[in-house]
Image (cartoon, rainbow, N blue to C red; front, side, top):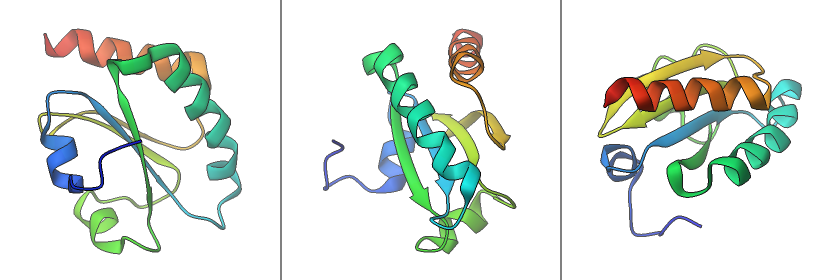
Length: 106
């Protein structure tokens, strides 16, 4: 669980990569992403934090990052976007994108 004292901006500005899942409760593919994100978290452990942002409850965050469809996944490190994709992403593909993005930043 992420500390309550940290803001969204503080989390994405940190050294630990953060995968943000912009979703909506009414979105079918978003619901299908949940077990994929859980598997990804189990496989990557502490390499990446996963944060879910409901676009209906946080429209400013969705607007700031130009989220036009859900689910949209954005990987941040030190406030910079390393990778982003909209739509359903299978676990193996998601892990591949995350690991390649993290290797590319080194």
